[in-house]
Length: 300
Length: 159
Image 1 (cartoon, chains in turn red, cyan):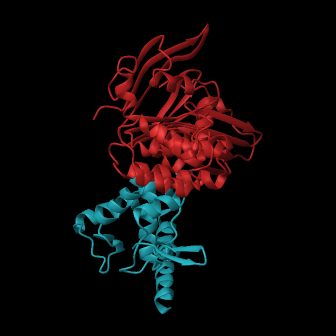
Image 2 (image 1 turned 30 degrees about the horizontal axis):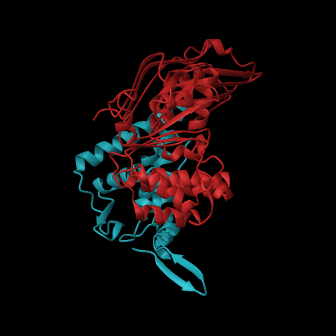
């Protein structure tokens, strides 16, 4: 099947600032694809290009194989987008806000709506202006999920949600959404809460300074990225001696290397220098993210 | 099994029968182990079955319950169960869920089972080399661990 999202060498400028400097990534159907990056790295700009809210300066974007500039309505009918800041007409109540959202959709699952309203504890009669930020986020999420889209684009979906509700959302709501049609329901989620979403993520892309510095399958990244910690009797050897290490930290007798894929070779090299002890640990997704932006990484 | 719902003076209590099996076997995911998530679950179910924490015929948590408890993808949980089923460790009964196989006879041919264990042993041998543990010490260690495993099994059966 064709990728649900395909971005190639995307460039976008705000005045003279290049927010996106040749971003490339692709999202497979049925995947939960994480989109990680610092503030200002270009995540929201990239998402806006997907939705035709911004036009690329150069490069291409395709959603469901279609160009957002030419097939905006066709694409939007098949996806749902929940931005970081959600807004509703303040005079409406929850029920009216949902009816309003539903009116734009060809599909709307009433059972899901009732279930999510109950799960989130939202009163249909409550006016929108009286809702907290978290509750407004929940309202937007209900609107997105009840429409039963093929693609869910989420930008910080748990913003404003308290830890309990956040956990519930991550544990249940996304799972329930994808479970209905596993091969064909795709989630593209941009978030800072990498460790909270870690279990859900199949593949991810790290963006830094408008470029993808790492795109990988989650399990594969976790097996390839490792931290080697060696304690030596005397002074630790210089880090430059270990070619291919992504990063090196040296403090007296302690040498810490982060490796990606070359782990076995570098580990053997390290052991050959006779350290007093060696510890090997794999990195979590959040640590992999931090490593890939700190060392600059090679654009992939 | 569907959860039961009791109402008592406005207080609703939901009892999920799935949590019963979760207590006898609590899987967990270590994102820093470098081992694919689905494989961790497969290994833990096998360990629970081999060690007696999971009894033959006992129900496993449903894919949904497992995924929610571990905060992982349903696909990942489903993949773990599919792998366990293909290895003959568990079986799925339509409408009832997944259960640990009663007789535990693997559908895989002996040669395949041997090959799989050989691969695991190769990994151990490499590790022993890295840890500078000699052949005799390795064999002694294997005998020791086997005995410890049998003892644990005996202790469980005795209860």
